[in-house]
Length: 532
Image (cartoon, rainbow, N blue to C red; front, side):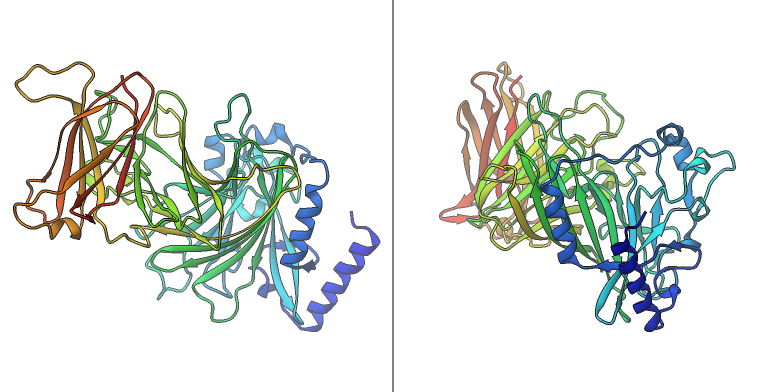
């Protein structure tokens, strides 16, 4: 219901739009039902989020839970959005917008709005839910949802301009927002994989459950005439401990680039505030695969965490599937960026038709001064590929207290390779086996490491010269330490080899790189090894 002020505002907005002669089809494709317009601005949305943070959190009332619970995985899969009803189906812009339906696993209703400018002012009109937008079986429980129920999320379809995309826009999308504050995009290899999030709260904090705030509203800017490469979307974030506003400027070129302006307001204290979080899956790889656990050689969406720290050091940390949840922190000041990458691009290393070798890498370019804090990596045990068990994010040094606020600017690169490649050789494999020498008694508990690097600095090592292995760990003993060229004839492909004898059973963090004289040849390899 509208109060008098809201009614007058909506009426004034409608009059302004009518006076300019803006046709309804400029706001939405045929078939979509729209609400009356109301004024919109980014600053006003930020002010609203800030005001909400000063009020107690009130969760949205459940929306027909008995109906949504019946829309299980199979029933949800039979509900398809009809592209004939897509927002911006006929333009303006290149990218139609389609919507996800609510269901058992996506019960929080999300409100979708389309924005239009009139006389220099922006107005928002909600896209009102109707089952008529979807194709679904006649006996689908979705028919019982009330009018205006809302949606679960949205997708940006590939370009509708035939000369711009090789993919059919009605069957292919390049960005998807679905569930809590999760979103993801395809990379240069046209494959989905890991996800990003608006925020991560209290991940892996003992005796405290993780909190999942929701994007509750989205606002789609009507593209300007001639804009065929980007979409701008605003989002309101709401949760018990935080509110916020996000502005996404998403570009579809060879890769997917997202410029994000975020404002966050803390409702209450948070023990671990994860900003710009990434979520991925790592089950096993050539590093450590239990015997006969699966027929495939490797299964993972990402194989390592890359960091370009404030001191300019390039770091590669291979991922683990630990026996218990592990949290690692890499302290830094004004970092350049970090990301979860999929470096292994060889199909034979996976042998799976779901295209693990094509999963995108996701790099976060941190814009401006992010001050002191740490890149933190959470690794959670998993026994299957269906679980996202890897989380990486930035944690500010200062505690996240109620009343604190954050203004963040950053850029996401969904790519094939790192967007800012290091001139140093990079790590391509970490292999572990029994220590000792073939044909001789193998010492108990000793592990052999073979760490491979490839890159131009190693290709220019003079004949007869072997790089020095610079290797450290807080405890334990190294032996048989040396570097050698991998005998495959590939220029610049070398490996460092060493045995490690642990002391105790606690995890140990190793650090290693290769050099010749004073010249560093490789990025820094970090690895957390669990003895036993």
